[in-house]
Each structure stands twice: as structure tokens, then as C-alpha cells.
Image 1: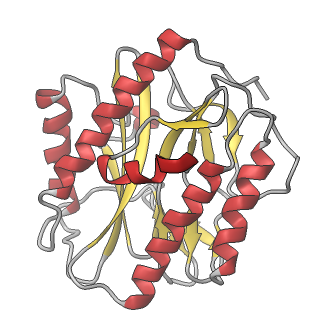
Image 2: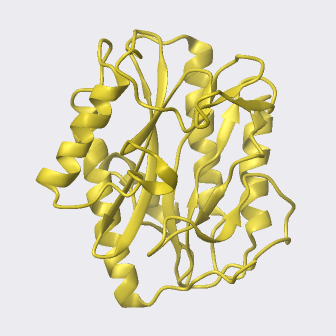
Length: 263
């Protein structure tokens, strides 16, 4: 496997800007995500916002032949859900919206779960536990730690709730390319795997299933669903390794409290 690409301070500054812009896309989404929208309408509104309002490029469009600017993964969809005019959100749904954005030659990647209307307690529990699992992984990032430490932190948190970690898909290095080295598994053993060094940038994006970890891909070649048809959730941030810890490059305003007192 290729070595992880360590970014210079100038490159990190450009990645911070891409991350800041991507965080603003989610703030825009927050204002109007609701029942009655089609997932294609979400895609089209976000594309206009990224291109017309931010002057940036939706990096997913055209990547590997994908036609859309984001993924919309609803309920039992684990990842890579394809926007559709026929898929209408309804109260009780949970949906992951996964967006990439390129500005100044560097890409940011992030996803967020939305709970539509009143959702069941077990759906909310899964969404919240997956979010905390992602943050457990983020908090394990520091120079000298390993990706095994990150994966173990995520896995331990998810399994403490009785949930399972999807193993077929993982986080990844990111920068000028959407997918760079290293692969970031969401399970692992302490002290194993790539040793983290200042300047590394990668995504942490656990997919956590309510039931078993097994998944399958639908005939469209993109959409991945749980085999047991139970719910799945995912959250994602782009993270940089700093001299003494981590920096979340796609941090949203409502999350800044997590960075107080070393969190």
C-alpha cells in the first residue's frame, strides 16, 4: 500500500477552507430537510448551492461514473444510496447525506444523519450511538497512535450498544484526491496498523448496523443495504493529525463544544 500523504501547512490551509465550505452546506441543509422531499431534490438543491453560492465543485459527481453530487442513504441503506425522484422522505425515516466538495484543489468529505419528523426510540438510539462512535475514533487520533487504536475505539463503542460494525467499507486518506492512503478501518486492535504522523489527513466514517454486520449491494451497483433489513447509520468527518492531537476539518458550528477542554 502507498504511504499516507502528509500535508504541508499551506495544503492544510486549503483543506480547512474546503472543510469550512462543506460544513456550510450542512448548515444550509439543516434549514429545509423535512418529510415530503425527494432525495433527488436534496441532490439538486445542494448542487446549486455548492456551485452557485460557494463557487466550489461537488467532487462526487463523475467520480467512478457516479451521476450525482451526494449519497442519500435511508433507513436500511448502509451507504452509497442513489438520489431518486421516487424516494420521498417520510416522518420516521433516518437518512445519511454524504457530500464531498473540492475548492482550491483539495477535497473535503463529510456526512450527517438526519432524523425526519418523529422517529422511533430505537432509531434515535442507533443514530446517536453511531455519532458517538465516530467521535470516539476521532478522539483516538494523535501522533504516535495507530489506526488500530482508532478502529478499536469505534468498534468498542458500537458493540457496547449491541450494534455491529460494517467491515466492507472504510474511511480513507484524502487531499488532492478523494481516496488516498491509508484505509481507515472502523474496527481493529490497539497498537496495530499505520502509525499516525502530523500532517496526515483522512476520513473517519463508521457505518453501524442495528442488527448483523452483513450487507449486500442492490442491482444498481451502488446502493448497499443491510442483509437483515434492519437500520444502519453513518456519520463522517475529515480529520487532520496535528502536533498534539487532531483537527476536524469539516467541523460544524453545533459541534464546537466538543473541542472544549481537550475534547
